[in-house]
Image 1 (cartoon, rainbow, N blue to C red):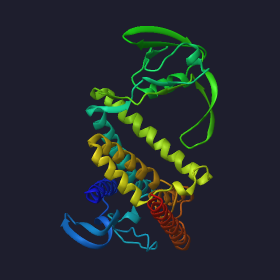
Image 2 (image 1 turned 120 degrees about the vertical axis):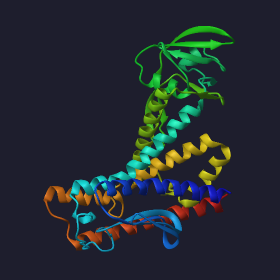
Image 3 (image 1 turned 135 degrees about the vertical axis):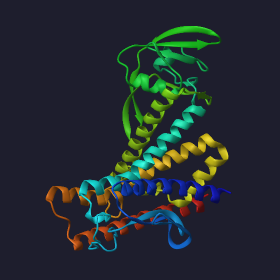
Image 4 (image 1 turned 180 degrees about the horizontal axis):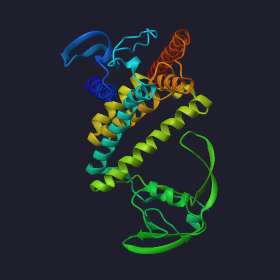
Amino acid sequence: MGLINFLIVLSILVFIHELGHFLAARFFGVTVHTFSIGFGKRLISKEFKGTTWQFSLIPLGGYVRMKGQDDSKPNLNEAGDDSYNNKKPWQRIVILFAGPFANFALAAVLYFAIALMGSNALAPTIGKVLENSPASKAGIQINDEILRINGKEVKTWDDIGNFIKNSQGMIQLHIKRENTMRVININPHISDAQNIFGEEIKKRMIGISPAPKVVTIHHNPIEALVFAYDKTIESSKMIFLGVQKLIQGIIPSSEVGGVITIGKVISDASQSGIIALFSIMALISVNLGVLNLLPIPALDGGHIMFNLYEMITRRKPSDRVFMILTITGWVILAGLMLLGIFNDINRLMQG
């Protein structure tokens, strides 16, 4: 069942990505010969309005094959106004960007649905108070519930961290303790901490950690739109930073996951409920959008770079340069895939 869920989720994500390319291409009048979910041998196909829609043997991606566009034939020059290679560079860039954009849009839709159904988060309830911390000295206790900070309503534990981080000087906490309300003033101190990438940072803190208590936050449609936008932007920034830290060597290469890890995460999420599954789908969709925008020649981002070069220099890259860079891109992608699979197998062997 886990494998089936993995294939369904991956197929949906790939379909949305390729649908973005397809719709943009058709908008500019480009003929699309093939719309494929998967690579390799064709398993099922149906021709509709000049396009062959198909499922292929290897379900780890997909593609749309447009008239006048073929990475293996950079000198391909098919005549006609319906040919990709005859479109203006900015139009080709729109077609290329439409795939990743569709993934970001899908993530936003999923986050919007999560917000309407009820998003889960850690409750603003204190589970631990560090000794000699500002919170301890101010008399804060375990199981205290923080309701407001400097007059701003607190709904989740993340709100506490954000309010304290962006505050200056003394802060005022409204706390609920055993059905009584208390007002406590605390002066946060600057402490050593680690970010999500394991880097040492300085951070304003008061010395508390959360209780293992979850709260469900329900949003009206307007709030859900804001939630969806914020989560999509936040996820995109996190993945961009993750790629940057990986290149810098801050994140070890052993942390790179492959299809086995993705499959396990999707399988586990599907067993936890629809909200967990939507959350993982949204995150993977953003991941797919971000990675495809990287300036690697075999990806959408690489092709966008080629077209930007043509817009600036008024000439296309030479066929030889295009082919060398494209092959280099394929090698990089193959290397990353093999690294991910190697790490997945290594994790399985280590239990």
